[in-house]
Structures are given as structure tokens and as C-alpha cells.
Length: 193
Image 1 (cartoon, rainbow, N blue to C red):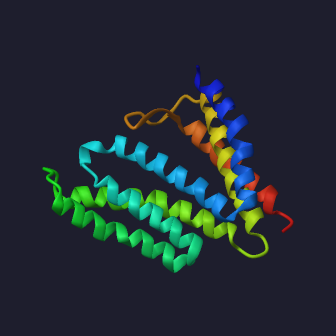
Image 2 (cartoon, rainbow, N blue to C red):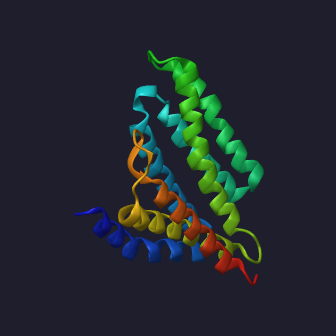
């Protein structure tokens, strides 16, 4: 199955499901964010396994960030994330690894922050009293538009590699078109608000 077919299949199933759960909000959105956090941290751990992250601490910190966002707001979201640092130190100390503590713990905290805080803010955004649903839909649709725009522009007109070592398929043309698509969708969705 090619990249285009897999993206279309994921969009046909995933788009209505994600938008439906965002519409419902509450614990439905929490469950979606928790699943996304676990899957994203799994991918992250595979990408940086040579750095020996304390991935259990990253899972715990990211999930505690989501719990904090659902139950207590921004302060609790940050508190959940900060638990990653303590857990990473404790688990790194208890474990037997040859990687330096600085590298291992830093890569752990980066993953928990990058994934847990971003998804926690999605929950916080949805909880804005009057326009939270619209703002969350706008963010998701703008991200998807940017991804789709970058994919097709990169495939059709992409010639200049963005980061050949890290991601050989990404092009500057795709990046620019994806950025323009993201801005356009956000502008259209929020123009008259």
C-alpha cells in the first residue's frame, strides 16, 4: 500500500472519529489524547533509542500532563509534566544504563514535554468556555491541511530536499506549501469570529 492510499484510508476513518471525539470533549477527548500520547511516545522512543531515554517516565509524565489538563487546568498540566523529571532521575538511577544521565534524562523530558504538553494544551483549548470547540477544530483542520498540502506539493513539485539525513522525503516546496495551507485554513476558519 502506497503512502497516498494509506493517508486516504486513515483520513476516511480517522477524521470523523477524531472530530467526533473533539466535539464530545471531556473524557472522550482525554481518551483520544491518551491514546495519541502513548502511540507518539512509542514512535519517539524508537527514533531515539540510542539515547536510552527512560521511556516509562516519559509515558507517566505525558499521561499526568493530560490528567492535569482534564482535571485542574494549566498549572496541573505543567505539574504533571514536571513529574517526568523526578521520575526520570529515579528510574535512571534505579536502572542500569551506560548512557550518561544528562542525555538519557534530557531525551526523556523532551519527549514528555513535546507530546504530553502539546496534547494537554489541546484538551485545555477545547475547554475554553465559548469558542473552545471551534478553536480546537480550527487547530486540527489547519494541521491536517498543512500536512496534506506539504505531501502533495512535495510529491508534485518538490525538488529541493529540506533535511536529507533526517527525513529524505521532505522538500522545501512541500514545507512552504504546507505552511501556506495551514495559515489559509486558520484564517478562513477564524476570519469572522
